[in-house]
Length: 551
Image 1 (tube, rainbow, N blue to C red):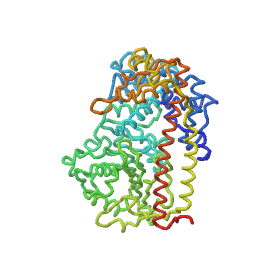
Image 2: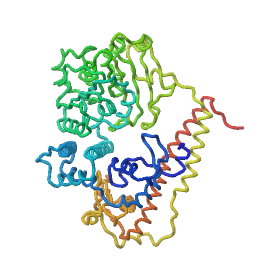
Image 3: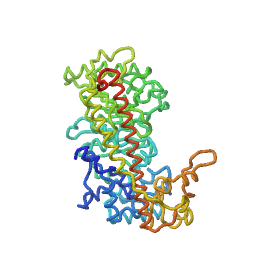
Image 4: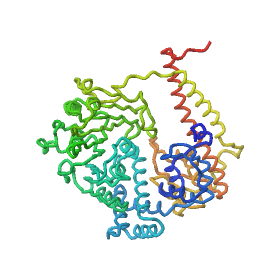
C-alpha cells in the first residue's frame, strides 16, 4: 500500500501499540494475526514493521472482546513486578528457569501458579519471548539503557556481514542476549557471551536454551577485568558497551596485551571495549561496535583512532538517526572493523566508508542514499584531529527545492483537510459540572478489581469499564489539577482522580469521542512538525535562490 493510501484510513498504530491497547504482549498480537483471518490487514509501514488502522483495530477488538479484560500474560507481568520491582530481569530469569523445568524455591507460589497456567495454553518459547518483549518495551518507555534498544539491534543486524558456515559470534557485554542472538538468527553459529550482571547472564542463557539455540554459552563476569574467553577468536564480535564509564579498570590493566592500538585513557572506556572486541577476532574477522558519537572526535582518543585508520582496520562508520538510543536523543555510531588477513582489496583497504543517516527517521530505511555515503581516503582522515564523524566528510547535497516544496506543501494540505474530519461531532450538553454529581475514584475502581496498572498507568481490567472513557476523563483539567501539588509539580498518582458513573454503553460513547480527540491531537502535532519543516525549506529556498516568489 502506498503512503498516500495509508494516510487516508486515519490514525495508524504499531503492533506494540495494539498490544498496549488490548493489554497483551506483542507476541499475542502476532498470534492473532496468524490465527484470525479477519484481523485487520496492514494499512501502511513496511513488511517487518507494519502499521494498522486504529479504527479497524478497535472494531476488531470490540468484536473479539479482547480489549475488555486483562490477559493472563499481563497478570503474570504485574505479579512479577510486585515481587521484583526494579529487578525484573531476576524475575524473568526465575520464570525462564521454571519453564525450562528447573524452578527455584524462591519463586513465589502465586507467580509459579500463573506460570503453570499459562504454560498449559502457550508454548514456553512464546511465553518467554512475550515477557522479553514487554521488558524491552518497558525499558524503552522508561528511557533505560539496561538493554540494547530494538532499533540498535536492527541497525547492527543490518550492517553485519554475512556469516560463514560454522561461524563464531561473540558479545563481551551481552546483557540479556538480544544483540548477538539477533545477529546469529537463522544461522548455525556458535554464540559466546559474557555479562557482568548475574541475573542478565542467567536469563540470556535460559532464553537461548528455550529458543533451542544449541550452541550458545553465556558466562557471568566483567569482560575487561576477568575475560572468561581469553583464547576465543570469533568471525564476528558485536557489542553495545557501557557508555561513559570511567572506572573500567585502567590502573590494573595498564600493561594488558589487548591494547594493541594504544592504552585508552580513563575517560575512553569505549575504546577499551573496542580493543577488547578486536583482540577476539580471527584474521578476516569483523567487529561491529555501538559507540557514542563523541568518541569519534574526542581529543583523548585521537592516537587510537589514528592507528585504526593507519592500519586499515576501520572499514566503516555509520551515524544512526537521533532517537535510536533509548536513554537519550543523541546520535550513536556503529564502528565496523575488520582484522586484516592479507586478502583485502586495495581499493577498500585505503578508504573508510562514511555513512550519515542522522537526517533519517529512527524507524526508517537503513539503506543510505548516494548523498549519505562517502568513501574517504585514509590520508584525509589522518590530520590533527582524526575526526571520524561521518557528517564531517560528506559534501552538502544539492537540494531540489521546487520538488521538495511542492511535495511537502501537498502533504500539509492533505493532513489539514483530514484534521477536520477527525474531530468528533459534539452536541450541546447540560450545565458545566453536570457530571460532577455521581462520581467514583480510581482507587475505588481499583479496589473493586475494575482497574489495573501497567507501568504506573491505570488501565481497564474489566468489561464493565471502557479504557478510552477512563483515559479521557483522567486527562480532564479537573483530574489534572488533582494530580498537581500546591507547588505546581505533577504527581503520577492518579488514585484520587474521579470519574462520572455511567453504564458501559454510555462509557463507550464517551470513549469514542475521547479517542477521536486523541487522534486529532496526534495529527495536529504532526502537522505542526511538517509546517515547521515546510517553513524552513521555503525560507532556505528563498535565501539561496532555489525558490522565488510567484509573479
